[in-house]
Length: 138
Ligand code: HEM
Image (cartoon, rainbow, N blue to C red; front, side):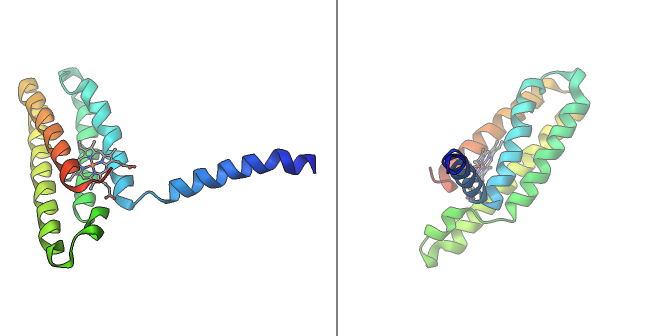
């Protein structure tokens, strides 16, 4: 009985933990991966000596961008039926603009152009903010 009392809170924590993990949408998982690469890149993007690491992080961002752009934000479900197609088109357009800037960043890092790399990185930050304002609910 004592054992059961001890183990119950543990089970509760595990269940809650697992269920909140299970609630992550596929896009949230992609975004979390993107966030990890993006944060790491922030520290090294202006360091030409870290070119290889930076290109690897950019490749990770590229991959998650491609996957995310084929997904639908969960806020799509809150849109009126008549506006859904336009909402998704707008989302896709912003994701495409983001992908384009990721390619510009890749080119700048490849060329060792630190100033252009920083400018692209900052643009990505603006596009991220806009994307979250328009499509993410919090
Ligand atoms: C550097 C770029 C970006 C980073 C680091 C980033 C990061 C994140 C993070 C950390 C989350 C929350 C994940 C979670 O709750 O577990 C998220 C969610 C989300 N992001 Fe981004 N994001 C970026 C760019 C974008 C762009 C460009 C768009 C849209 C054009 C976008 C749309 C969304 C949406 C819609 C969600 C909610 C997920 C859902 O609806 O299922 N993000 N993002």
